[in-house]
Image 1 (tube, rainbow, N blue to C red):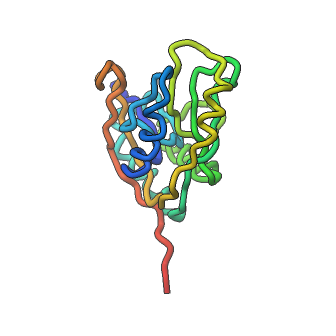
Image 2: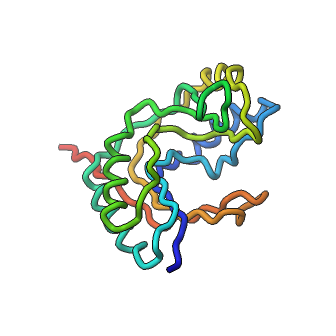
Length: 186
């Protein structure tokens, strides 16, 4: 059975990616993730059976419509697994994404596309150091960044192909854009 590595995410618009890229550009000494790959993962699906992809997109679409579009801003920094031995540096969203992530994970599970078992922490990864580092100084710098706010109107189902992108990074392909419910105005 053939499977595809996938994730469900919120991708910042181009203006926000440019704003963050401009902030990071003069900060030397860290290998920053390519801005085109920046996203906030709601669920990671390591092995989606190919015959379930359309069913997965449909289930995720129904779930997305149960959630309203919302405003989001990036502000505050963190590190995984911790600041003293950081393997990932990230920025925090200003809104709680757990309800949306929980719905997405339930939808994936319902069609046999099992999400990873990691505890959900809303974040946008900006750097993956080559080896664990003491990141406290970097976190102080990243803590000074606060993005403009943007309206999140959809989530994306993305296929990830390891080693196929520039510099042997993953290549990401949007499989489906899944709209959130737009608030009705009178």
